[in-house]
Every structure is written in structure tokens, then in C-alpha cells.
Length: 68
Image (cartoon, rainbow, N blue to C red; front, side):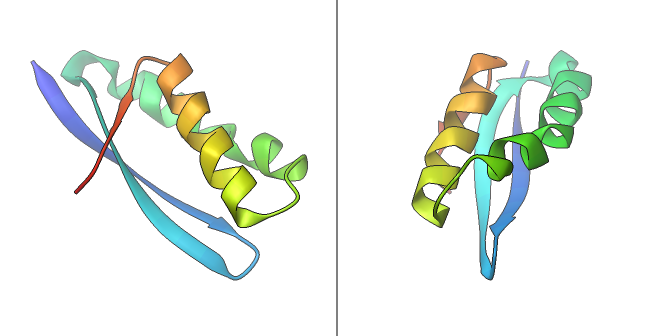
């Protein structure tokens, strides 16, 4: 069964909420992916770069970005 997952992200003063769709059994994988976001942010130069890398990161863990 599919489920929606939400990631609240921030880079400097910029904040956003991204929605993803994935299998409901993968909740632990989503939480694990969220915990590694600080590593992604360390290499980014701006919020747009961070946003794109976060989306790619979650997609590599099996979660598809959805518009809400």
C-alpha cells in the first residue's frame, strides 16, 4: 500500500515542505533518509541546490516526489 511522507527541510533561512510517495512498509527507510540530510546540506551552495539534492536523495531511497 502506498503512503505519503513529508520532509520539512531548511537551508539557512529558507524553509520548505516536500511530499513523497512510497510504500507504507518503508517508513523506517524514510526516517533513515531524513537523518542524513545534514550531510547533503554541507556541500550545497544555495537553497535551490539543496532542494534538488534532497529530492534526488529521497528518490534514490525509493520515494517519489509528489506535488501537494
